[in-house]
Length: 79
Length: 433
Ligand code: SF4
Image (tube, rainbow over all chains, first blue to last red; front, side, top):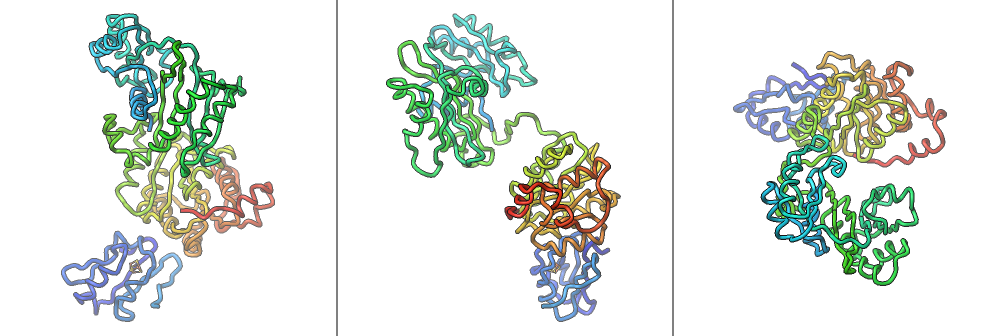
């Protein structure tokens, strides 16, 4: 389930990438990603804490992680 | 944090300020033993952190140790204004020739401590200031520069004292000033400070109040006095509402969303940023509003922390609407607070547009915050609307007046209604939080 303000989508092609799971868990300052035994897990309860820092987008292969702002219908763009 | 009289006396003793011989007793037998040691007439005083001891029968004079024991028994069983005494103080009854007042308080306007001295001691100093202002001497001093005795001397001399009295009182008032700074006090007073018949000076009663935030710096002193770490020493017990506010703040280390004080009004306040909360609280009152609470938000709290505090306020019985207001924020993010307060409304089943009377937090990430507020139809204001004006709008809305309507309020729509001083205050607002 998405948050009230933020939703995050991780492309299925990379959810099993153990290295990415570790990197995302490390990168996100508000614990939106968890490394669930080598799989990327999105912690739904933390979604609304997203600080729009783009660190997850930078840490993932281009286009595989999308951070959506539900209040204005836009997405965080890669730097 | 307030000290009991017996503790204040120990602090004076520590700093070598002369006091009458005394002891603290928690049983009538102990009180008798102390009276025996003092050897002469004594005064027995209830140890409570409230006024009106004398009127309530919490202060008695005894000629003998037996009499002291009997009075101590009565006083120990006597509740004063709902306060159970923390024992009794048994002190020598001094042969008084003259009473004075010596105090140091913090002047919040000048941001400096100030001496207050009077040659009319033993009575309420506010009353003296009102009825005999010529008997009060004052003077600020620095907390940074080395203390100079002449500043204390000058304050005393303003009351007309000269010669021996002036010379002997100066080191006492100076020592009180040093103690004030050393222990981070907000109040240190001796009332009365007395001249005995033999010409010497002693403190007969003392009151001290330490800045709460400074407690960790004075662990040794507090341990020596036996003050427990969990003793709050507040004027009243915290209410369940306030305890919950404290819990919300302590369980999440991110930012501040707490320092909650309960009032019985109908306008819930989610306010903060440095002195912003005080200013905003006062502004609400000035416009005739009845705040349901005081609180402080700052340091960029998480969304969940802001939401939990907002939920607490929203669920308080009697709260009709909330006002979310801060001075201009720099490290607290507008969008994060906006998410928090809206989330609280939605999760409690309220319409944010209806429940939030006004959202006035300008500053970091405001464009993002305003997008969120617009999405939920919440009326918001940017920095061109002063805190005073925002408070007025909130008060009008909760009282049933005011123009309801989503979207932004701009200064040009409201500035004309403000006196010039307020417009200036808005323009020169300090960035905080
Ligand atoms: S943008 Fe930042 S805060 Fe948001 S999910 Fe990505 S890493 Fe976490």
